[in-house]
Length: 109
Length: 122
Image (cartoon, rainbow over all chains, first blue to last red):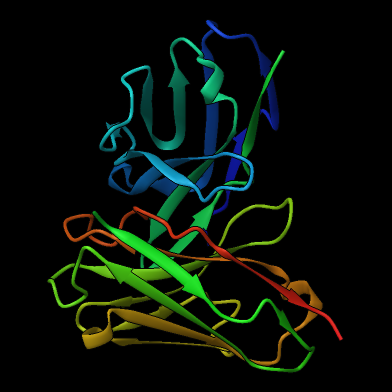
């Protein structure tokens, strides 16, 4: 099973700053099958990025994804107040099987 | 507009079987490539994938939970049902259903239902 490790666990930033979230896989992941989700308290996760770098419908262009192999990054170019939430990466492996990272909490500094 | 909604008991006793229903609209599970999946999240913890059923009625389960899970679909009712046997307090979680869009080749979950909290306690 592929393990996804997200860092940092908590990121404290101010609105307007740039956020960089990391997702590292225990073995190589196809870029086609790496996704990012945003989850706000009391809400279901929302798809942000699929295929490592494609934005989902309706997602602002301040969100971007990059990476390949075992290292992937979610970048929020300029934080808005509504961006403070928990972010999860997810990979799809053969069989199929899916794993999620443990999450990065983005909090207001 | 694609929507999914989970329903089922809020409280189950240890050793009982949990049955959850996902009722969806805005898409057909008969469409090639379409799938519906179940994912859970214990309070304050990360997400865990449980099971998936595809348009062709193929079923896939989490390796760690497969002996306890059964997923099925009723295409005419736009419903997917998950059963989990031998419930334990560690199974206390919010259970989500989510669509895997056709064209994603089983890749990602979009959108998700609102989730239903299931507590396992005697």
